[in-house]
Length: 181
Image 1 (cartoon, rainbow, N blue to C red):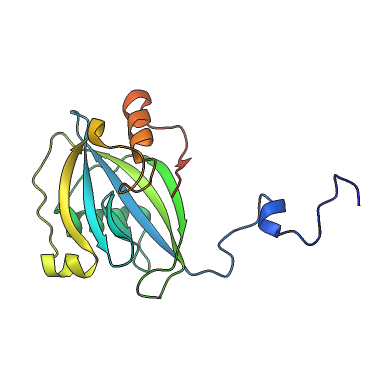
Image 2: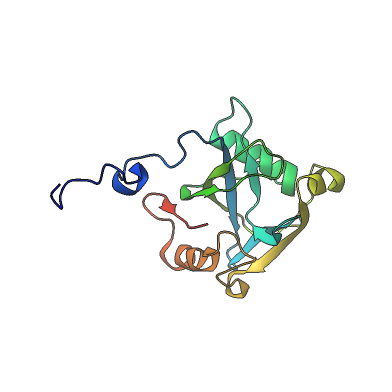
């Protein structure tokens, strides 16, 4: 076998860049919103997971059968933060997270994140009850100045600060950027 020939015993995902790492996995399709004010504040959701603890993430969630990405995002924003009629901007980031979900139905989640500019900070008023939100591990909604967000846990993705600062200084990317777990 020459150095140019692939190793037939190697993992196909490692040797074939087109191989899908999700083959055979149950991946939940989801959407998230970067709700961003002109004052460089972003709305984050505090999740409390039994095994991994606190995580601050963008609002959003799983898609329902038959929904488009925009329909799912509009529904999630109404349910989770009480926002209706927001102008959904461009798809700016994508994230694939392969990890078993607590309920056992999914092996991971593929997220599309959209920029949703808001004119000013608003008081989140979820349409779901706090009992329903807690059942989904949601415990708090809070506006964060971008300057107060640091890379690493408890923020999700772990490089959220870097991506928010790039968004703030450079504007939306020409095509979605793959963000890390």
